[in-house]
Image 1 (cartoon, rainbow, N blue to C red):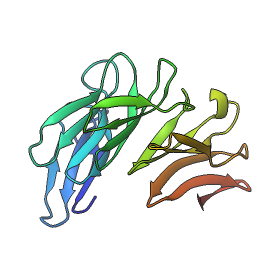
Image 2 (image 1 turned 135 degrees about the horizontal axis):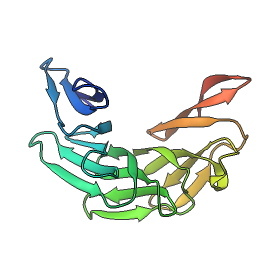
Image 3 (image 1 turned 30 degrees about the horizontal axis):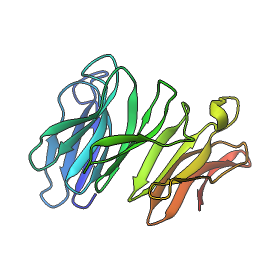
Length: 193
């Protein structure tokens, strides 16, 4: 986001994942975590969120202020909290247990909110402002291929974008445009909405 690029890297050895940041303007690479299993970072402005599975036997969602390097736990506990994304003051992630689903949090209130209609099989949420997209197996039936869903936070409107029983996954959203990878005629293409 802007001047910073973040990624997970296995420089510490086998199965030792940490997050690194590269500053485009300075050309410097900085190791941001050092706990052994930090993955899937996302940056918005001066904040980064990621999935951290090193603190306990479960995965949590953590946030870091990239100026002070101060960490804040956003979603922790016995549930698996994964696939975090951030846009401004809004964060989205998946809770993979206790019924599952996509959760959002406004960093101004620090209160989590479960998106009704999202389920245990939800994956890869992406957030842009007040719009959240993700892929999910309809009805949490893993025999049905995943579809793409869109949720608008202020109106609490949930829309199933795809409905074709083909594998649709890895959505992203920016400025109202939703894109994803979809199966078509035995190969994968990029689709938009």
